[in-house]
Image (cartoon, rainbow, N blue to C red):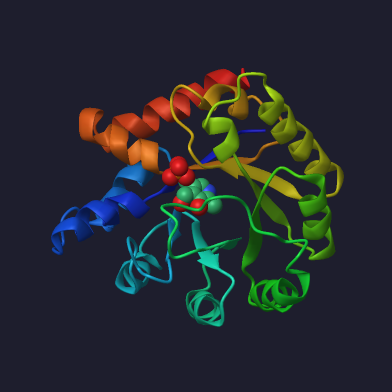
Length: 239
Ligand code: PXP
């Protein structure tokens, strides 16, 4: 199975917002992702609009051939936005205003009653629902009960350092458990040229979503080269 690469364009908007103008334009990044062979566009419209804004989502929808994966908190506001735009996929993520980035996965097990109607409404609108969770059998069990077709496994702990390989094993076991239960596993957060290999080698994973490193590396080598290099490393790891 070819491992797809979804490119998260949030931090193109972060740089734009630092000066309050229009440059760099996230849509221009989308054109580069398309040219570089990226398989999807991921963007996170946060409650505080710190990077991607509503206008970015408006401009993106219908203007790319790539599937759009909208990361969103499980709130009524975001649900309404997702239902209006109907992206290919909606990834439910935990969100706290004080955090720098999405720290930790969604508590799908503890929030079943809150999430269930959202999953149903998104699914009924033809949107593929994904849950961003820790590689934890309890959370996968919750995803099964919520009938989520996809989960994204949080690779943050692995990316912060995994000297004994235990986090990598947890991710591999979680990916296998997902497939056994008919869920398509994706993974992402904190992935770089240096640490993507062992994750890309997990055979059950169908997609990686990568953002911050690709945009950061683009400062030095350009966005297209940064995406192409990541793609090549993923392909090499898949053998
Ligand atoms: N997947 C999810 C659910 C995320 O929230 C993020 C960060 O926005 C990513 C993947 C990408 O993480 P990074 O920017 O560290 O590559």
